[in-house]
Image (cartoon, rainbow, N blue to C red; front, side, top):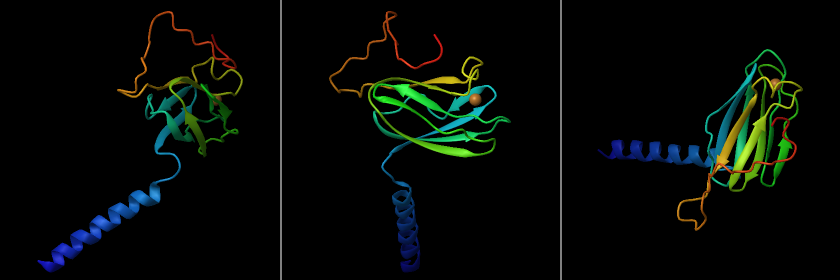
Length: 142
Ligand SMILES: [Cu+2]
């Protein structure tokens, strides 16, 4: 009985240690898969705050990832086929555009949207009217 309890405690300890080891400045991790000519996201919504993008190029050509939106305008270096990159971004509430900045790739479909919604009970209102203006500069498509 005592041995079982110890084993359970050891397991619990290992689980906690695993969580702590994984914790970093960014609580949210979004896995991004890039290939010709598509960007896949493990989540299209993320809470405002630090987000860690883990980008993997599973395609045949080099790709990169650009992120633009409220307070954010950044991109990775070119990611060679089979390689990965990490991009740390602090999101505010809003809609973010993700795309591959390699010329022509976004136009062929390498683009995605990520929404950082207003937290429930946060006092703000999420307005998704059709008059929604997404006039983010630096986005290479209309
Ligand atoms: Cu690309």
